[in-house]
Amino acid sequence: MVYEGNQKLGDLFVSRREKGKAGLPTLSVTLNDGLVNREILERKTDTNLSESEHLLIKQGDIVYNMMRMWQGASGLAENDGLVSPAYIVLAPKENVDSLFAAYLFKTQRLIYLFWAYSYGLTSDRLRLYFNDFSRIPVDVPRIEEQTKIAQILSTWDKAIETTEKLIKNSKAQKKALMQQLLTGKKRFPGFEGKWKEVQLSIIVDITMGSSPKSESYNRDKAGLPLIQGNADIRNRFSSPRVYTSQITKECSIGDVLLSVRAPVGMVSVSKHHACIGRGIAAITAKTSSSTRFIYQLLLAHEPKWIRLSQGSTFDAVNGADIRKFRVFIPNEKDEQLRTAVVLDDQDKETKNLEKQLFSLKGQKKALMQQLLTGKRRVILDKSEIDEN
Image (cartoon, rainbow, N blue to C red; front, side, top):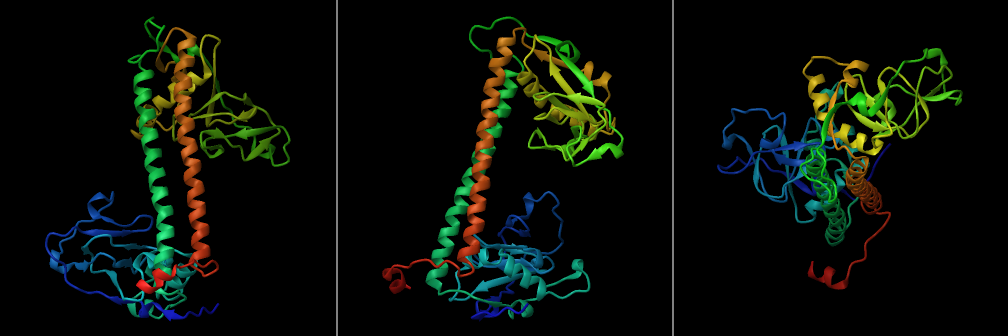
């Protein structure tokens, strides 16, 4: 496929190879977050290079990793800083808006061209040098329209960032509520009796899964849906991939599902009357307890199971382990229900925010496809054109 453009990237950028200056932060290019401070990376690599052996980047520059540019590894510099000399620093010319270009570099077409102009025998050896980068053809509008497009897309980015913060805050609030409500530290008015510590088997019935023979698996909906393990769970709800005509152990709609094989302790809810395999235990609250409360209680204990399994003590639990697992609960079922309602509402708030985030990201993706390909043009005021 041959692409043509009204300009080449070399018409828009020059390669900046200035020596670094003391006192500036050292940054790294990431695939998903662009330029970030190297100190916050989980897998940061130490370097013996002095500050002057790094490359200087200035606000508005774009930096890319020439070994991973074909995957989209580039970022816009919001402030001055230092980067590895293995990176390519792009200094914008007067005819390009850096923010517009940063969005353009994330489009499917440009990433394909970055791959096409990279050199290397295998994917792990592909490199995009500046000379080859500069030959890539692009279609770009006038600088005034570039700036307008960048402003529109940045509005969506700000909305996405705000929603991500709200999700983070909502999850933190849920964690704080769990610490208060599931330990008896915070009580609802009208409930005064002491909480009790009991084995899980006292308040629930536990059904350990048993895997049917593989020849009974089918996609013709013969028998029951099969929930084998975490692969059949999505967003905390059962999501079976196949059916089985051989029924071993069963769960009912609304049962709490507990993963009993690595990762141990993951909690979800069954939306199906289903057959459960050996990776799952189904938990049903007895009449004295609330299933919704049990779900929230086991959610709070998830980290404990995970820590145990990660400590190489085991990679699976059996029925005895689950039955003797000790939990702290209120005596009255009504208090359990009140607690569950508050925590469920917090979960709903988080899920609604996550839906908003998904929608915003979809809208931004569609806008990028329209605005950065010229399929949709923005309208410029005469004053905007005159000023530029």
